[in-house]
Length: 213
Image (tube, rainbow, N blue to C red):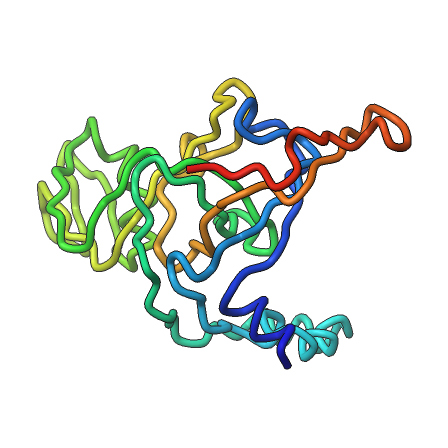
């Protein structure tokens, strides 16, 4: 029960599998996800609950659980995600996949967004993930069936980019992500292993317990 509480509310480790955040993060870094910073999320389905999620290893139960999407709630955090933070979040393409990227833009709840033919490509994903419908017809933008030149978000949204911009699958391809997708903040590297080296030489001693602002 203590382990469940720690993983759901305080934090958990994860591994960097690619070089999309180089040189800040290296492939093989073991990170600590700080969930206290932004507030731990309540589970949205059984697979999100440690220990109990073993039942979802059974294929019929896993498929049934994928249809669950309980109401989004999270505990209060001591900070909010802000521009410059490195955050861990669920990929909008595959929610089972965790991504680590830097927040490069924050769209606040209630912030008016100008929507025209030039900005539609940028904000289309935001509108759709906020529950809205958008289309372009006869040179006009229709949002929720009405011609409109602006959109008011119902929640916060974030634009995420990798520091290694030439080798990063990020918001430039999948658009803005919602506050609901944010898992936690990256604070420090627990330890790091270089898979290209053998034995003790593979351990990057200088990166052990390396903290980041």
